[in-house]
Amino acid sequence: MSSDFSCPSEKNLSRAFWITGPCEGRVLESPVVSGLPDSNEPRVVVQTLWSGVSRGTESLVFNGRVPESEFERMRAPFQDGGFPWPVKYGYANVGVVVEGPDGLVGKTVFCLFPHQACYSVPASAVTPVPAGVPPERAILAANMETAINGLWDAMPAVGDRIAVVGLGVVGLLVSWLASRIPGTRVTAIDTNPARAAVAEALGLAFATSSSADDHDLIIHASGHESGLKTALTLAGQDARVLEMSWYGDKPVSIPLGAAFHARRLTLQSSQVGQISPARQPRWTYRKRLELALELLQHDVLDQLITGETVFDQMPETMSRILAIGSDTLCHRIKY
Image (tube, rainbow, N blue to C red; front, side):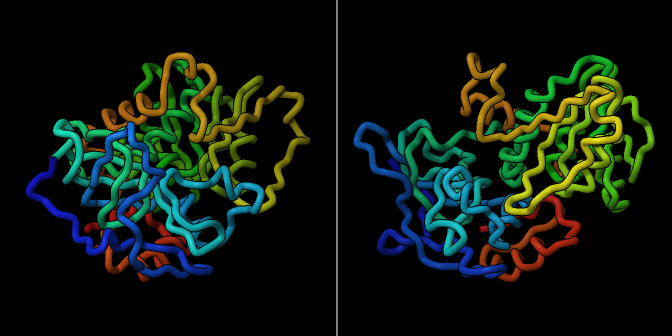
């Protein structure tokens, strides 16, 4: 079946953003159909409304900093091309189903798809956006998934003293979710004072530094080794430090001397590609994504979207917002 919408495609091609070299990209024609055909799986055709730039990971890809050992593990679900380039990469796409099963046609859906105007994927690859979530905010779903999985790994408890170091989109979402647990004391830390406004809008206590070393849990999400060093200094006796940053091909040096052993600290990694082991018997990736979309019903989360440009401007936009030192949180692409 089909809706009144139509994808702007000719000869089964659509326009997509490709990273074509170090710190450069182009809008090129790409196939509408993605994924291996499966006669037993109905497909949908989606016309994109919005996509989001996941600044941390996409910056590493844009700058060619994915190590060769991670080329396969770092593949996005519907990535075309390969690392370092040319590659079509991204995973925050919101659009309208224009062809597919009757129950999906006309629905607004989220898909882990790159920046492309029109595409066709198996119907199971799209998740309907809840009625209470505007499509332009639903692009945060992938970041919310990462935050959820991080907290599943961290296992914060009622009354915990929690510090979150690094206030990108994921760090802010982790802080916001943790602050909603009764009795928690959450301190959101970033060396950039410009993060204060958005942190406070989310109801968070903001600081550019902290000398308190009584935290039960510290979550690091800055992407810089200096932030991880800070996280270790904030840990109390037998505390846990959860590392959510991924550094690509950059070596990281951290101080595991000093009080690290005396305080019996635990340093644990978290990565959204696998559901926390404690949840795997009961949760699927789809259920986790559905939860992420449900949690986006709060209007205050619009504070995390700090810019918007039209799709045709993506080559110039990516060079600007993925530069080192950019204050961008989530940047939204309009189609």
